[in-house]
Length: 161
Image (cartoon, one colour):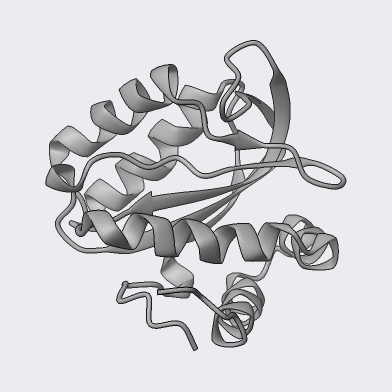
């Protein structure tokens, strides 16, 4: 397993997120991380501001995913929060502020060490390149099942250090 050095549990999987914009979806998950004490109060605004400048939507087979993240100084404990949208939410595509992708799954990263950002992004990209995994994540309501699926994927992943 790639040692990603992060806190992740089924409590950090949010299903049925109701949002009409990317910033609403991001705010929902960011505030949840704040309630859990995993991020600083500044994280909520910082991650939204970063999304406005550096979009994180990724088109994948079937539907889009997003990987919002921000600077390390806003994080208390390194973690990932997975948000499953009730209905797809429009996000701007990474690297293009003109293209839109309808996002069903959001992998929100809260990282304390700058070098871990690339490793975690590699892990998420590895998962999103598997349409069968994304499809299961998108339709599953049981956070325990989602957790097991994600952990299985991470354990079997080859990450370049």
